[in-house]
Image 1 (tube, one colour):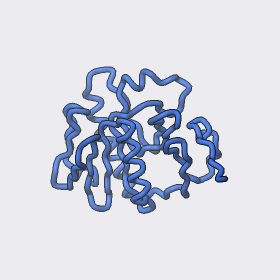
Image 2 (image 1 turned 90 degrees about the vertical axis):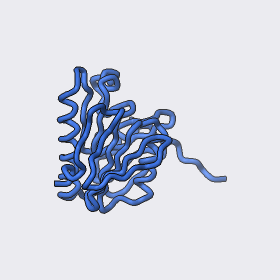
Image 3 (image 1 turned 180 degrees about the vertical axis):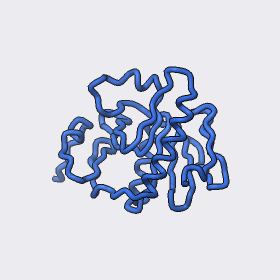
Image 4 (image 1 turned 30 degrees about the vertical axis):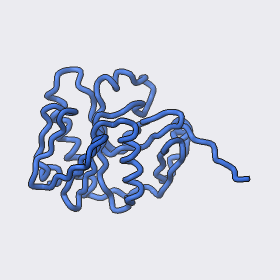
Length: 187
């Protein structure tokens, strides 16, 4: 008879050692791979995306939510837990207001999740995270390719839309008024 491994919680995931292994949960199942070595293209793109979002956020009426970066921990689902770090996220003021002050991750859905491709990303990993975001109900997901200078926009129940460096990226209706020329995200 086969043994089924117990599902892991986010709290158990957070208790694992910080030992250079990238870990996340999909429906309570632990995923692991060697920590991605960030490079200047990934880092610059993360900074540029976060900067544009922060400039937009600062022009919104208060309370205006938060822009988070650098593998910000997000728990999308419970029982079983789906949790992982996101490169850049915009989290609404309503979700931020529900967070206990001692919780180091966001327990709830971001309005926008941004994954920036790295050389070590696999199609399977990106597709699994993308599916997790959309299945959980995240309304807007961007997959940003710093090598091709493109942004693919995903929303639940819609076909993905690809934006190139010659186009303008918007985030209506989720981030009202957000607009940026795609080329500004890449230098």
